[in-house]
Amino acid sequence: MNRINRRVLPCLALLVLSCEVFAASEDSIWSSEVEVGAVYSTGNTDESNFKFRGEAIRNGELYVNTFKLDVLNSTTDDQKTAQKNYGVYQLDRKLSEIASIFGRVAYEDDKFSGYDYQVDLTAGYSRQFITSDIHKLKGSVGLGYRQSEIETGGSEDELIIRLAADYVWKVSENATFKQSLSAQIGDFATISRSETSLTADVLNNIALKLALYIKNTSEVPAGRDKTDTETAVTLLYKF
Image (cartoon, rainbow, N blue to C red; front, side, top):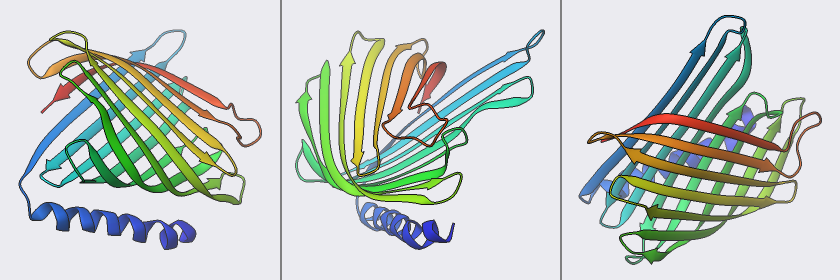
């Protein structure tokens, strides 16, 4: 914990402080969404699953602040089968209508990954390649640092290259398809993430979302799987 306090928390504090200083001097537009899914079953097997995801974006004239939180908890017969918390903060400085530079920090605590935690800091450049009303495509590249604290002791500290792409397809007035891909390439491991989702509006601010999440880690602690998948059906509220 001392290591993460010395190395990571000062950087995180600097990012948050810069966010407030830069954003305070300009008009901003907030947009947020929250999604929740829960399943409970009793009988021969007692099982509960809870999924929460929140996203808030503060879009100003020059700066964009993005906050994301993803929580998953699953229990079968009073035994935890999944417990994950994943948070991201990103600050973008607009260079033009289609390009920006950014700073990003992400923290993950996954009880079943073999790591106590993983945290990464990156800075880089992003650009919109397609900006039509129906299709949008954004790509980014960055350099940074990742720290992975191993559950059995020790840590992996490494420089990383981060590549990411986000695609949005407005299928109809009420349906939206999204595909997000990212890869963090480091000396110890490459971590790849994929999020595929289809959202259908059911009321003014409420939608039904079907999503598939995949995370692959090229090198993992002994006894752990390299690939985690998650399929979720949630209600999405936009405000």
